[in-house]
Image (tube, rainbow over all chains, first blue to last red; front, side):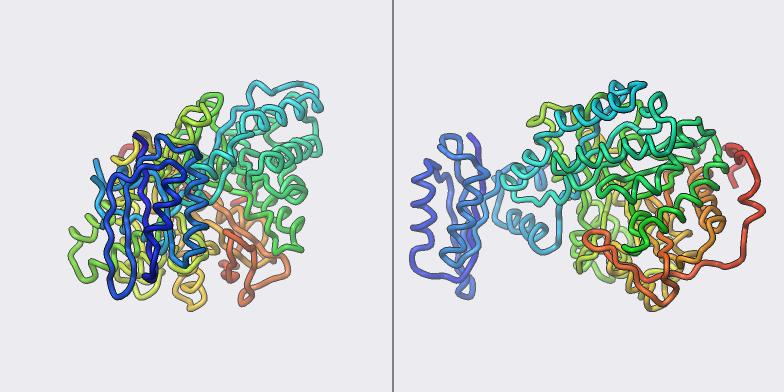
Length: 90
Length: 454
C-alpha cells in the first residue's frame, strides 16, 4: 500500500467531491477513508487514498489535482502520507 | 492513523509559515580528478560533476511534488579546490579556469550554487593554497554560481594570521571586482574558523577530505514555524518556552530527514547529515530576529539578545537531534543581516550594531554573516574583524565565519541590494581606529590552552 493524503479546502459548491472522486477513479486510485466538514460555508475535505495501483506518477497526480482544484475554484493538495507520519509520530 | 488536525498543522507550516527544506546539497569528492595537466584536470572535474549530479535537480523537484514540501535550493559542494589544483595550477589565472569549469558544470546540471572553491589553511598555506586565495577575486567576479571559503583557523591549530591578512585583502579586491553589482562577489566568500566538512549551506559549503566519494546533505529551515509556535506561549515561563522550541525543531527536522532519505534512496548516493539550522530569508515571517523579538526583546540587539539567542540555538539543537539519524553541518540559528527582515529593520532603527552581532556570534551557529560595511573600509580593518571572529571560534571550540561585504562607493546611510535570497542590507558603521601594526605581524596565533577555563 502506498498512501497519500488528499485535502480539499475552499468555498462550498455543488460537485466538488464528485469531480475529485471521478479523477481518482480514472487514475485507479482507491479511497480508503474520507471525511468532510463545512465550517462557515467553507468546504474542508480530507481523504486517505491508496496509490499503489495507479497508472500515474504521484508527482503527476499532485500536479493534476492542483490543476483540477484551480478549475473548480478550491485548493487541492495531494501529499504522500510519510510527511505527516514522520512529523507527528515517533 | 493520521488525523485531520495533524494534516492541517503540517500544511499550515508549509503554506503559511514558510516551512521548507532549504537545500539538498550533493557533496562530490574531486580527489580522483587531480592531474598535472590543467586541461585534463578541468575535463575530469566537469565530467565527474555532470555525471554524478545529472539527476539532482530532477529528483529534488519530484520529491517536492510528491510530499508537497518546497525544496528551495539544489546545490553541490566539492572537495576544496586548493587540494585538487595544486599539481596543475601554477598561477591564480590557472585557478580561475577551474572556477569557470565549476560554474559551467553547475549551469549544466541546473544547481544555483556550487561550493568548494576553498582552501584549508588553518596552520599554514602551501604555495597552491596561496595561489587559490589570490585567485578568489577574479574567480568570483568571473563566475555566477561558484562559492568560495577559506578556513584560516581552528581550535587545534590556532589562527593563521598570514592567511587572515591575505583574506582581508581578497575581500576588498573581490568587492572592487564586483563593484557594479554592490560588491556582490563578497556574498560568495566566507572566511572560517573550525569549518565543518559536511556543511550543506552556502556560501561555506565544501566536501571535507574525510568524506566519501559522494554524499547527500540536507539543510532544513523554518524560522516562521518557530515564531508561530512561540506566539501561542506568550508570557509563559522558560520551561514552556524551551519545550515549545524543541518540539517545533523536532517536527521541522523530521521533514529534513525524510527528504534526505528519499533523495539518497532515489539517487543511490549515501545520506550524510541533516543540518538543523534556522535559516532566515528576507521574506516576511521567515526571520530569526522575529523569533527573538517574540521571546521578549523590543528589537534584536537590545540587552538580553545574546541570552535569548543562546537559548534558542541550544533548544533547536536539542529538539532536532533526536529527529535525525545523523546531525551535522552548522546546526543552530543563522543570524545573517541582509537575509533577515527583522535584522535589517533592527539595524535601520539603530538597535543592532556590528559589536552586538559579534557578541551574538559567540552563541549562535555561525558568525558575522552578510553584513554590508562602508566600501572605504581598509583591508587591514577587515582582517582585524576576521581575526576577532576567528578568535571567538578558536577559543570556544565552535565554528565561526565572516562574510562581510565592503560595498564600494557606498557608506553608512546607504543600502546595498543583492537580490533574491541574499536580500538587501543597510551599510553598517565600522570602528575607524586602525589595527595595521597588529595585522602586519607575520606568523600565526598559537592554539589556545584548554585547561584553566575562566
